[in-house]
Length: 387
Image 1 (tube, rainbow, N blue to C red):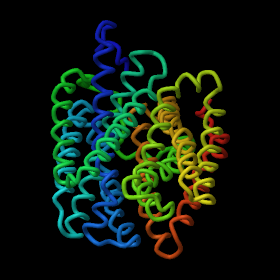
Image 2 (image 1 turned 120 degrees about the vertical axis):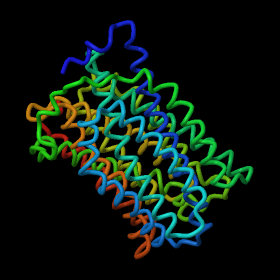
Image 3 (image 1 turned 180 degrees about the vertical axis):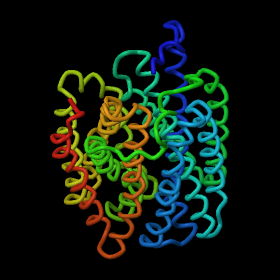
Image 4 (image 1 turned 90 degrees about the horizontal axis):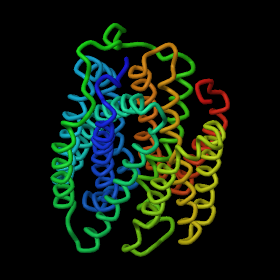
């Protein structure tokens, strides 16, 4: 579909800013939760294994939404679904802050995963449309806004932790900010056509080999990303043994280079080539985690997390951009398939860490994640859509 008919050149910047705002809201909300996981773990008296089991509620919520999220975006339009998904996502964050029992946290995290996947598919479908309007790759910059939001939210979390603000108040503040951004930005998002190409296709289409391979690349990278979001604070507290005031240092280091890498990602990929960029990314993720595992001390662990952040930064934007070039499925359907497979990795990584840590330790958990992350360097050489 020619999306440019909806967007005269003088309004392109409003489309781009509006879609970027939804990426920002999603990153802000998720990072708020991630920054307070150690506190919620302590409040509910959870062990590493207990926390890992509870965190399974997120991927279960995501997987429950997989059969319907793509269908809803296709049937009702990404403009409507990104609004509904983002509002429900921010609202569910507030519920997480008020849990007092483990079963309440499980229910809230299930819903968080459900609405997170709906928002993820809808906002990336919007981003593909805006990218078509611009006629060049801008996907990495959108994901950079997601990372920037995570960095801002992590810093805000550090401030709230330092002044003993409870998660309930913290999450409510973030949700109110999210609501304000959503209501301002939504009217400028990409309109949906009255009849799209996607509507003529079956709602459940098996991705071909090329799309499955892209999904697997995204899966491996996002296992690493999800683990870093949910466990970096716990790792620095329990493996690196930093003071309580420094538990967010690894997370902030990771988010800093991840954010910078995404804003530089389009420029670097255009000069180095996308395949070379992905190979470098896999090497950085693997080596960064290896340093953090073999040298669990403040300086080397922080340096390792910096490398991981830069390595993770460009993988998903490049994979999503490649998915849009599929010749067997429309851009929207291909993106839904690849992003769904990738996002499962994002949510499986955290419980995997907890389960392995229960039987071994956190360093073994992070070592396994490092091996998976390194696989992206090999898998990208087999992906025909990455050029």
